[in-house]
Length: 630
Image: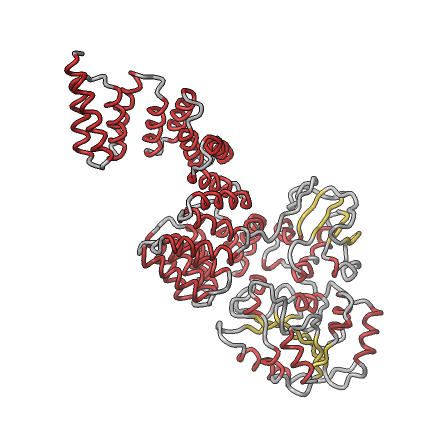
């Protein structure tokens, strides 16, 4: 090349670069091409044209320029890195990683290449390797806020939430107006249950960018978890205002409306989410749950089936499918799908499945001559309902060890078919197999017409029974045990429990009323103290033997859906259970009787409204009760 051409190139390249930096891409491109006319192998012009083509999203041309540049200089790390970015943008992540690694091989301290490699690895869900790349990038460039941010993202994906929080805080300290870091920090704080702090983080992101739909979405979710439903709806509306096609905002708004029992409005939101995003499994799943609450069970099942078709491993959809089938009486499918509860409980951080070296028994292996551990897994009521299966397992020739909640150990110690009853944490004898109590209907292939509905499978302690009968004294009126509320921490308690003030005036005077509750809420305690219509002995209950004996002393038990209702049914006592409109699956649909308990009668709310109709029926039916003599 002559000196005149070289001089011209030396003048053109700075001009082109200046125009490039000013964003005048066509003018810069013309100058770079002029350089190539003078010198087709000019490395700088080829590399800069690669950069410019990448900016213009002309990936094929960018690949051509970078490839030519690398033919001229095969050791140029930046060209490998930049070419990797092009493949990355084309979602050709494996090829991008190979190019980033060639950049690092030529320049080991190339922080950007380590960072980009981490991003590509994260896209492939190779989170541990991505994390290592981000740490390399941070070691080389400690003040690179984006590396700390993406390290936090990798840690979040690995569910190492505390460490992710540290990375997000570091990114924000380096870049105080880092909205995305505040959003993801808020998401991690939600995972950690630090909801008030999550709200602060989302609000900080909104301060930086008031039109950030992701910030408003995160804020709405956090506010919903804080039971601030109205504020939650406002946040979702803001998200939709700034992004009208935001399917996730419609879906989450629907969930808040569903929690508020505005079911028809919730369905409308889910439908809008699905319209915007036809493969939105979460929206189909949530719509299915909403339709179930509206008692449109077949439509609900169709929705969760659609969610599962979209995502075969969708935990909530399988869980809801199990509940819908159990509720509708299709127990075979219901029990099969009910095994998804372990994934569901673990996902919601409510329960960690037990780990045993002994195999799970689901009815496939013969167990004659073997020892099996049957273990409680959920609430007291579930244990009382499903402990009946112990005798059926024993009838298969097995020795049965039963592990149940400590308050139930004495009560269940004489349960038919059980060799030994232990509480969690106590030493376990040798056993060959194990099975959670609520997997026994699956193992024993229970269908609706084959439920082991024993008239009575529990008995109260005779000494406790005599003790409580002496405390109660001579019976002059029919004795009715009352349970009007359950554990306030139960998710559906707002629908299943009744305020004592709403119940007490409905109780006719032809009966004597006994509280079967041990725990009393403060507002109800004041009513009990002022109104002596109900006798209360909660402080005298030592364990469930006392509750069972007092239940057994009644002519009738009236209860909301709590463990005492199951206890009374298992004792064979006439029991009236007051159910909300969206009652639990075990009570099925529309029935006034229960295939689980022959002595139980069900009083259902016809709608999601007040308890008036239920209590009016109970009031009328109580008036017909007469004193029974032994």
